[in-house]
Length: 350
Image (cartoon, rainbow, N blue to C red):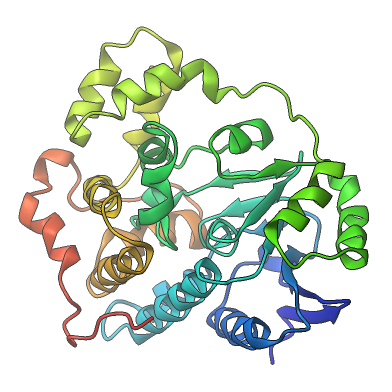
């Protein structure tokens, strides 16, 4: 078993530690498989009352999936991509359906794949160190790991806003959006875990009672200031309508948001809108199957995903050359092709 993820069993609490601090605890396929397998065992183990997932290093909970390895293989016969995403999504589904309390300590950077190992559990504890983002549109990908399910179910149009812009949220905003379930200062986490080890935690109500002894108020949410603007602009039907709406808002937030969106992959923006529109009407497992179809398509040709990862994670010049270069050049059939069953005819099996 890989040392990049550590499992412990203490007083009825299954403890998971993500242990790749040198890469901000990014998920490898081995980590995804190990986590999925361990949860399968713990689900059936009556001595395990609840699960807690945390990280080492102090800077990041988990900065995402290790997509660099997929890109370095190239798009021709990209089995690495399909295998990684299948393993990751199966693990995400395992968490979503897990019948026992599942408590994530998001004490640091939490992005992409890191969101996927937390958001689908019963409890998400955030601290003053937490930074949330779904930044996939900046690398030509989509907000996956269940983003199709949880983003459309956030209040108002917050989900589409976060999925398109990759906006970074901190403690009060994370709680306001419903992504976090409770806030406590980082220095209280060890004491909180010790309390879990001492008490009965066989139900979510038990866990809630313990959390209540440590929870704090993170203060006002900045998102609340722009909420009406977000709901109005990102409540539009198309990305072109969103741009048009933002252009008539006389507010710095709107100008800054337009500037951010213009940096994103044009085809990703259109795929994401279709993805989240469909996801709002699907159950969780069907969302994951849809996402698998999309990422299999994206990784199967010389897509913006390869250029985006090169620009952001490999060369780090942050100057991607998107193809197509503009929204006008992204045709409907180009978008819809990403929702087809993979060429091999195999859907994700959950």
